[in-house]
Amino acid sequence: MPELPEVEVTRLGFAEAIAGARITRVAVGKPLRWPLGVAPDALVGLSVRQVRRRGKYLLLDLSRGLLLVHLGMSGSLRFAPSLPARGAHDHFELQTDRGVLRLHDPRRFGAVVWVPGEDAPLARKLLSGLGMEPLSGDFDVKAFEAGLKASRQNIKQVLLAGRVVVGVGNIYASEALFAAHIRPTAPASRLSRERIERLHGAIREVLARAVERGGSTLRDFSGAQGDAGHFQLEAKVYGRAGLPCVVCAAPIRLLRQGQRSTFFCPHCQRG
DNA sequence: ACGTCTACCTGTCGGC
DNA sequence: TGCCGACAGGTAGACG
Image 1: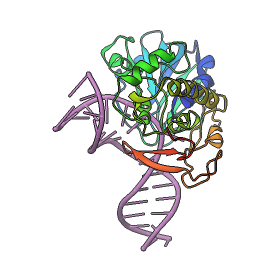
Image 2: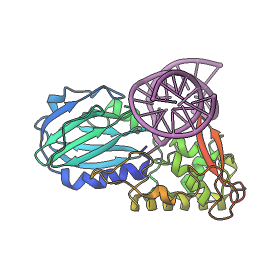
Image 3: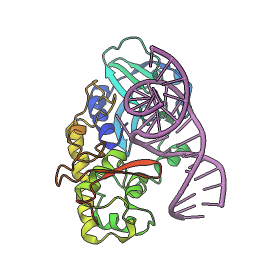
């Protein structure tokens, strides 16, 4: 479910409210992608200092160590003064003196991992190797171009891989390529400077717009306040196979790249 | 070192 | 109505 916009919307929905909160109780459900890495009770008494984001990871800085939270495919976080009893898919919960933070994740591809610091081996394994943050200043055209030139894959899969730029998942990869008029199958290393500039701008615009709209709610995503996103209503190609292109009316096409669906307009995206 | 494929898990949807 | 396969927002790890 969650790509960068959904993760950022989630962060914005509880970061301020939880800052300074003291953990009073920790509850866990079924196993997630990795073990927590610490006894749940060892977190009791710690406080949450701030919530940052790196790619699709949320980093909760605690008074000792930090929690890395990933929402996987089906995860969502909720933060509220109180919540109903935990359900079958609520697999992690922090009770604090300011409210309850709960991870709901039916497929359990998500993760909550405690590490002593960002330089801990597990943290390094997960976070080093991540590409540039698309909404920050370090995402400049030159570095983007250098990353694309070094790849021998098609541009869609390079975006998804997150080694050059992070946060662009399956929805926004198709959307950004449509906005930039670039065919998803184009080899990344052969894109012209002009196309790279267009794509660079398109990625930033699409992601920023999606954050503004509260993310995309395809099935059940909701932000930390429980509210659905609306960007999916603005999707020009994702999920629209066979429907007319909103620009030229040509039928949107669907193809598979690396076992994932890609949507594009054969007329608007010719290069 | 890179590209490609598998696996993880549950729910939903379309077709028969 | 029920069963079965295909598919779903991600990505580490194994393999060649």
